[in-house]
Image (spheres, helix red, strand yellow):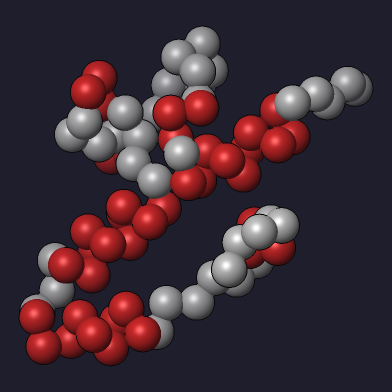
Length: 79
């Protein structure tokens, strides 16, 4: 098994989904955005949209409670 640049791109796709090439497995409809070509939305955009869909009086608490955890939170330079 040979792994190339893909090992670095997999985490990049969380933050910049445009790195996912159209030759890869197509995204399910629920993960597609409303952008050009139905491109996937990044984790920050999805998180922001989820919080903004809530009542205005709880948004500050929701934003304050966001915690990055798991393997991808260990990406160098992520703070």
